[in-house]
Length: 550
Ligand SMILES: Nc1ncnc2c1ncn2[C@@H]1O[C@H](COP(=O)(O)OP(=O)(O)OP(=O)(O)O)[C@@H](O)[C@H]1O
Image (cartoon, rainbow, N blue to C red; front, top):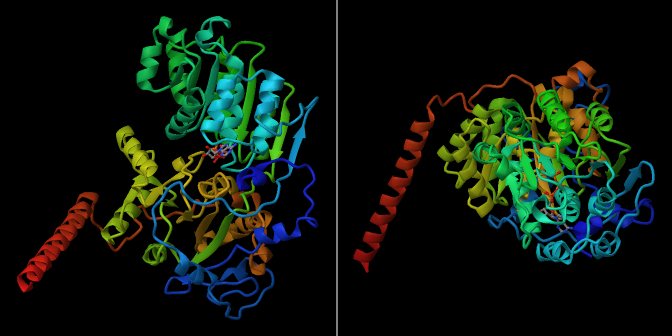
């Protein structure tokens, strides 16, 4: 059985003693990095003297550490080899614990074929699963699919990259049966909501692959398609809409969309959709889905208590499934917390990191759009190859182009903001760098979850400065929970107050990552082109000289 399935499958009693060798394999990764001008290396027991965190901590030592740099050794082994999707699955693994709470929980499946026997899932759907390489269900698929096919409401919490998309798409397609609502009256029958355009697009693609061979009309809701669907005759033939909340609400308010035949409503990245920014839009969508027998499901890798309460109130007699530990990254991701003295020291640290062989594509998260653009420019000016940037301040076309380069493996370093943190599935991303500290545990879990997908190994590095220190313990606990070892002094830091927790990652940072450089984007591009031109001329000249010598 593939490592991915093993890792993410259910198994109610995870016996740590019995699997102690596997457990060991998961441990020993939170560490510690490179000691040059701007970064300090720390190990499990001692605190670098320069770190002034004792103002937060009670106890610990001030002596300098002497631990060897495990990171440096590892980086020597790294190869610069862009190849988005070919990473091998890891050789281990332990089963993840699954808890399913609710009344009359349906039995989980072991194989997709059981769905044919138990629920009459069509051979075509089963064939499409296998055609896409989905031979064995993951944990959330084993447990979640029967629940949804039993027409139950579901709150599903499962780690990043463990196949939640298929867990809700498969039952929807399995239940819709005939296309164009012939048997079910007219009008859209399923709505899937996602927080970003890019994620909605990705879900749409997954849905098309799974639906291949059937004539279901599956629409990615955009300005253009919303206009087309304003015509009721067209709209009535649509089976599934995949959309961001705002787009749906705009059409509902314009009276050009009707959701009163919707039988399935899925909120992907539910905690994000139920936060203050989206909540009223989601409430409007839910209210518009007026069928009393509608099935609702919420999915996410994280579901903090507040969001869970709202979700549970929205669902009817729900079953709550949790795979692994809530709000916890997969142990497949090697996590590192790296000290950098201050914000200005991050750029040299990153350049130093990129000067070593690394595994592209690499995803780098900044806290704001201007910082993402500024960092991308700086990398280009420093001759880093194939740098790209994607944030919500870019035009639709720019975002689509950046996505397309990323999918084709043409981007080696992608700089982004929270917009890319959730749901995006680039299987080949092997390294994530949190250039700016995440704003919450959830943000951390989702950002680093862009690597370590579908059973592959990944690596996540998080830079922290003195300003981030009050929140270090919160993230250190996440590392610990996911099986990484964490320096003891970090765990001795006091717990931040509720007030403090809210300020996590919200340090005031300059818009430009290199304040020494005050040039605009155009100047940066000009300079890059000039450098490239001069290199080309040099090469030409050298070639001429060579041929003369011959
Ligand atoms: N049964 C399966 N076997 C093998 N691969 C699978 C299976 N199900 C899904 N995958 C693959 O796993 C990857 C991750 O799936 P998906 O994007 O649905 O994860 P997710 O749990 O929704 O992650 P996130 O929380 O980040 O949104 C995808 O590339 C998908 O094709």
